[in-house]
Length: 222
Image: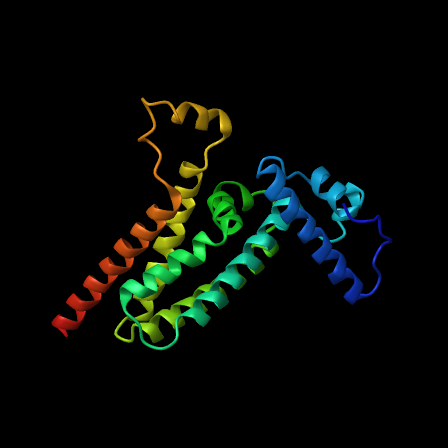
């Protein structure tokens, strides 16, 4: 836990405080899980009173959305750096799968975005978040189109959206709460839960290769 600090005055100091709160929230999320990441826990970890959080964020959901956006931006930059010039669809799928697998916090928050994080938040705040996420999606789509030049932007965006939707559904299935995990480890149910990493790799290949087949059919018609 960080030392209790005084109220920030300057824009620079406010940004430092925002960053400290976000770092504290990330530590709590990793240690206590999604349900344990409350405003009280974040405030205690950051060394502030709970009311002090509202000077910088309107809700717990905004704090977690900020972590999600930062993770998405990091993923986009990593993907762009790893895809250098034209590449095969198979390689692109492998890189995209790795980018998600390496970021469990992003996978967790993506799985909670529509059902939890987009609630208890104002329209202006979610509008700003969506714009930043759209900019990230455009960055990845541009990288995809450079790697696979015959893809149209629509195909790149569709592939990326399908991957996010897959992660959103798969992550909670493969990371159940402990009382559920105990049951799923019983012989009767042990085949009900796929392993996260190999499933992400397989799904990324299946999705992007499927889009590649559609792209080839489009080119044949033209």
